[in-house]
Image (cartoon, rainbow, N blue to C red; front, side, top):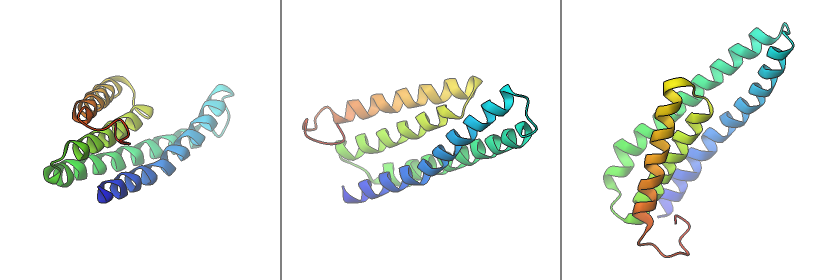
Length: 130
């Protein structure tokens, strides 16, 4: 249980800074795009680079969860916690996705949130995972 909390917090804090960076760059990008500024190209490149970083981070985290953590997790609480983490990662990907990728990430986030709910049904209402 303690290890899952550490993994979850470290994954979220690792991507948190990139998400904040992306949100800041996105505001600048939208402003520069609206005014056709000289900084539009720079902000567009920064936005694309940050989107790619978030994508790579998320892919690594999902791979790690699937390959290592879910294989050794047996309890409903542990599964619910990891499914919630995967759903959160897919939700973060929705923030930087468009088109088919956005649709796929939304479906994946919904699927894993539902898996979390299914696995948390037997847990106490006081349990933080629930």
